[in-house]
Length: 61
Figure 1 (cartoon, one colour):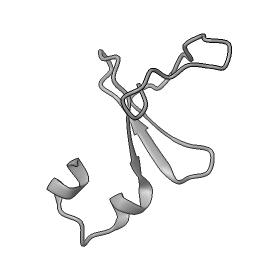
Figure 2 (spheres, rainbow, N blue to C red; figure 1 turned 30 degrees about the vertical axis):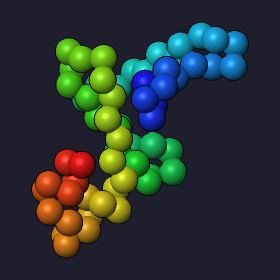
Figure 3 (cartoon, helix red, strand yellow; figure 1 turned 180 degrees about the vertical axis):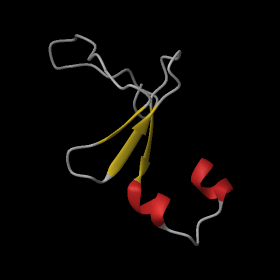
Figure 4 (cartoon, one colour; figure 1 turned 45 degrees about the vertical axis):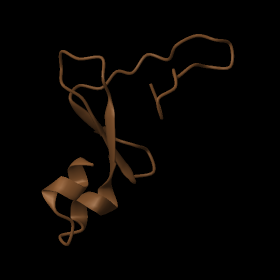
């Protein structure tokens, strides 16, 4: 799911995500992470992780 909607290719197939815990996108802007035994994939901007003014609660949101 992305933005609450199923993630599908134009042909209707569901992409497979092969993330072993975490990965950085090719542009170096996002970190993708997931529990190893879950179907849920999370994303957070690297800039947010580096921003020391953001609280843990804000990052969690």
